[in-house]
Amino acid sequence: MTHSATLPYPSQHPAQYPAEPLAVRPSLTYAGGLPRLLPSYGAVPVDLETHLRSHGRLPYRGRPELITGDVEAAGLTGRGGAAFPTYRKLAAVAGYGRTPVVVGNGAEGEPASNKDKSLLWISPHLVLDGLQLAAEAVGSRTVGLYVHRNPRLHQHLAAAIAQRAHAGIDAARVELIEAPPRFLAGEESALASVTSGGPALPRFKPPRASQRGVADRPTLVQNVETLAHLALIGRYGAAWFRSVGTADEPGSMLTTLHYADGSRNVVEVPLGIPITDLLRLDGQVQAVLAGGYHGTWLPAAQAAQLPLANAALRPLGAAVGAGVLAALPAGRCGVAETARVVRYLALESAGQCGPCFNGLPRMATALGSLAGPRPDPQARADLERWSGLVVGRGACHHPEGTVRLIRSALQVFAGEIDRHARGQCTGSSRQPFLPLPAEPALDEADWR
Ligand SMILES: Cc1cc2nc3c(=O)[nH]c(=O)nc-3n(C[C@H](O)[C@H](O)[C@H](O)COP(=O)(O)O)c2cc1C
Ligand code: SF4
Image (cartoon, rainbow, N blue to C red; front, side, top):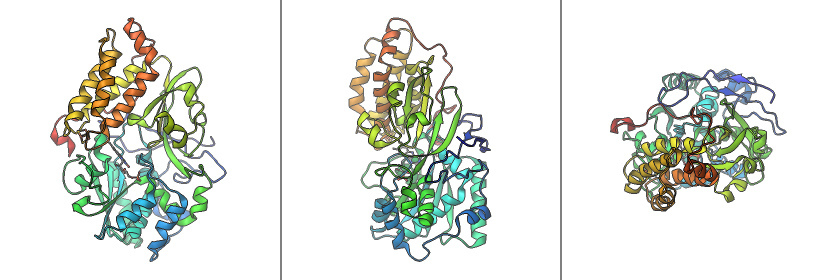
């Protein structure tokens, strides 16, 4: 670590973020030159003049065919969670015959993640450049930026967009769209619905948003970090992008780190970095949550042997996801932590698919019982059975993600569950460790 700074992040939505500002440690230095997305001098927002001085003007003007080829050569994958190859989406959306819509996804509904808000606040012009290039690649002039509800962040982005319009940089006008502060709001079909004027509700696929999304037009939805990488690949090329990361998972990514002492950080790291380079995994840490609240608990000793790469994590049922890593300290009850998160996830179900709407609250109750002093002896078996009943039966992957978290907790904290059955608990602190919004969705209006 060569640098540390405090992020002057806009006052956070009271129902979504912890009150304290998030630190950003942008300048871990690697051979290929990191940081790329966040400036090396700290967490000060980069204005247009500084941005243009650092990176020059937008490349590719009038040569859209080059963009998709360069993105393919770079091996860029989506940083919104699924790591889908970006060039395949660009090619697909451009090929459906109707003029597409392009939307940058900065909803970041995951309460444990802060990397997209940090990126939008500090490096808005990289994201806006990426949006322009993506629009050019798919032949669109209808472009939106879907951003988590936060008045200061919206003001900041509106000013950046206006500055660019004044400088005549952009071919397409970017419309800012407010994402409701809900876990599901960033799911691409929910995004398409909000952008079309509807509620943030996912819908069954097919059709995918890439085929029929905003106003029933083919819609390219890319995470804002993916777009920022695209802006840099356009300037510096595929070989430069690949100079960090692994051959199969090239490049860098932003991660939100939750340290065992309760502090948090957003760091840009190369894919494939050992997890122990990011989190201190000594006897003070019992487990690591990889991939956020749709992610997977790993025992600390196992996580200490792993790199931050899907090739290593997927065989264990885990994934890099959107880059959340949380080190659960000794002295906290992993079952109670998971039960709190699952209760939140159950309340965030959009309530349109029976198995999800009925199943997740029951699972939350069963896990709550396992976390308590006199657990229902049936609860563990019920959780196993219900897991099988909700998976694959919803319009979105919310049930799958929630079940992944529950199943990993049942395994990793099996000893703790046994202890609860005997009326004991190793948790010496009941202070919540994983962040949650203050208030879950209450009624239908909250989805708008
Ligand atoms: C429940 C759920 C929530 C999601 N939330 C977000 C989000 O907040 N931001 C995001 O970029 N992608 C989110 N995604 C993924 C999007 O659906 C979509 O795949 C992504 O924005 C595509 O961008 P990428 O290919 O650049 O990653 C979510 C997916 C699911 C299933
Ligand atoms: S699966 Fe659950 S969260 Fe997803 S759309 Fe259906 S009810 Fe809503």
